[in-house]
Image (spheres, helix red, strand yellow):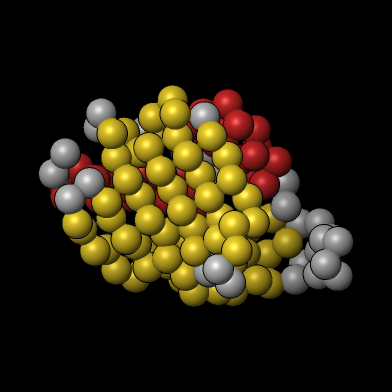
Length: 127
């Protein structure tokens, strides 16, 4: 899969994510998708398979009234792409860590995408 098609799949995924469009997020994912969220070097969430990913995506959609990932750069290497991201979200619910509904979350991070059979097989969100 060439870099142009890899970038298109990533952009489609992020657009769907920003629009809370779970079916759109799933469209280009491999059935064996792996997802990991890594915060401060610790894996805070790990999922395997499209059904687990779908369930988590649906649940996470309820946490925010607005959310947006903005890509600031792409770095291509073989079947892996590193994407730097600016993230902003507005909470729709109170969280156990003390953040309240209406709170704004802003972070900078990166996402790693890998591909198999012209689909996304791995997403690692790192902050």
